[in-house]
Length: 190
Image 1 (cartoon, one colour):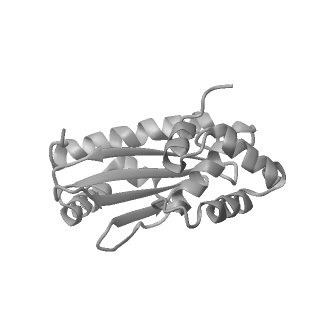
Image 2 (cartoon, rainbow, N blue to C red; image 1 turned 45 degrees about the vertical axis):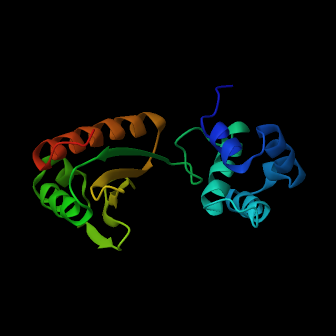
């Protein structure tokens, strides 16, 4: 079995070895539970430990377990579809980055070919999201997130790809789109 890259991070964050987590999963009968039920049990287990962002770590531990037992492969979501992401640092602030992306996306042939509906933009002080539905059940979320230095990162999340092969193809397509966008928007931060 290939080593799961999530496991060392879960061990470090929670202070528990993977063997301890496997014993916990066995105790709760996780092999018979849904993803939601596993994550809920892990969250309850982490409650009160002082761990920062326990819900995120509950999800991460649950996915690592599901991959460990062969229920899903890396990149696979609970519904059987796949997801991938592309992330790049920029020198633009959060709002100008999203403004630049929105203008670029409206004109880019590859982005326009992906769309099956008009994109929606929403945001908070912490992030701005551009969401769009594509064809064949796929969707994309482009997020502008601030960094500590006042600049922002562009994160593209691809959701709903049908196969691992399509997932990798979509990741490469969107990586090229992001590179094209950044070449015209601003130089990427180191």
